[in-house]
Length: 124
Image (cartoon, rainbow, N blue to C red):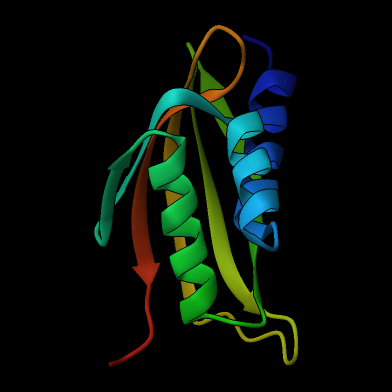
């Protein structure tokens, strides 16, 4: 797989996380993930596009007015890629949450699995 395949997959990933409204989230998730794709991080473990969409909607409810942004370049080989990200306030640019994800891609370039890691989280 070429670097552009990984970059395209990650761009679609962020489009899904930043989509607004249930219908737009569902469409973006369908474009980014396979039907049986999964998402796993310390706070969630779901399989299927509906599950992924629900996790995204939940994160948006918890952090209104924030956007997910890529940090650094995408690094990938053999259908696996990793990239950093942060959750940034549109209002003031603060980024209380950051981490990195490792994804595997299907033959069609969509995401099959996401394994997320949280490097920075707000104090509770």
